[in-house]
Amino acid sequence: MPDYTRLDRLSGEACLVGIGETDYRADYHFKPASDSPDSYALAARAFARALVDSGLSKDDIDGLVVGPTLAMERTGEVLGLDTRFTAQADAVNAIIQATLAINVGLAECVALVYGNNQRSASTQYGGPNAMGGERFQAYVYYAPWGLTSQGALYAMMANRYMAETGFRPADLGTIAIAERDFARLNDNAILTEPLGIGDYLSGKIICEPLRRPDYCLVNDGGVALIVTSRERAKRLAVPLVSVVGIGASDLHRDAASLRPRLLDFYHSGHAQTAAQVYRMAGIGPRDIDVLQVYDSFSIHVPVALEGFGFCPIGEAARFIAETGIGPGGGLPTNTSGGMLCESYMQGWNHQAEAVRQLRGAAGRRQVEGARHAQYVSDVAGKTASIIYRAEASR
Image 1: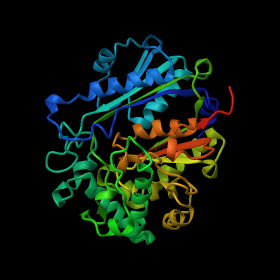
Image 2: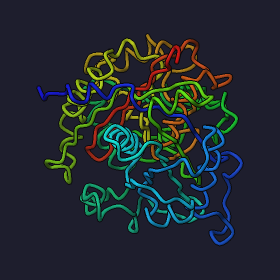
Image 3: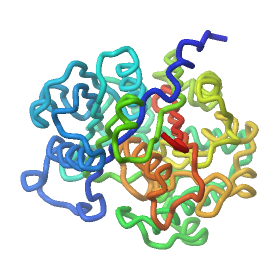
Image 4: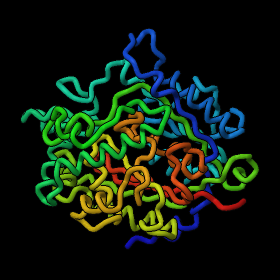
């Protein structure tokens, strides 16, 4: 077991004090790219809202982490920022980067900014012109056999998982329905039409066994988060939400052929990440009040539930049925509607929702008494997790 004692000392020393998102629902319509805000404009809109939310000014920002859709220099230029620390990362690693930078003194107040005009720009995540293969060989490895989209690759994973565990199409439907039920309580969610199990099972199969509700949205939007030191956060007029656990474990060996995904559904990476994140936070799965799972496809959810110890391996279907992951359930999961129903922001909107829940500001979908929120992801072999805590007092 690695020595995590140095990381343990970082627990609670960085706080999320600002969140900002664009108007996903209002902006969800086709329009010519020339008439649409680009990724930088969307990011800037979210950043301005995060500043207002935090009570900070632009001059207070001395660190910047940008999402992989944006260039670091151009983002800083558009936002008008000169910073001591600048980096690029996906959602979960942006939080980790900011936490580490603050704790080693590279910055005190870090803006995390993401923007994506994927819908109006007609970004292709599948087909012969799919993006991403230059970075992740798994995206194109199986193309000669007709698997030319992320949906096809996750369908292959889902088929094996279902064969191994007895997970059924109706169990996938339960996940999609739970997220839709949360989305219906969220005025900024895109998909809010009622969805029942009959509707799900009679729906069109896109790539067996995945139906349309199992797929994430593709929409334009932006998200910004502001992370600062605990001492600085105490001086702000916002509820205190701290980062108490971080963990990561990347599975690169044989990643191009999807073996980490297909052999054990990333559970070996999950186990290492879980050991780190729960030790650092000083809690376990049973202490989590709200769970946010990277859900580009619904199959992520049962795999994560098992991998992070919410239920035994192979028993996610029973856990979901008996415990419940929707509104009123024992483990509310993807409480904004997630990327299946609220907005596909590549995990960034999950961070904003976690903070909102811990502030007690999620409106009709608020989880009563939420104190710990966890985010987990397993994308292209990169398993990672964050645990946030609502502080009882300053």
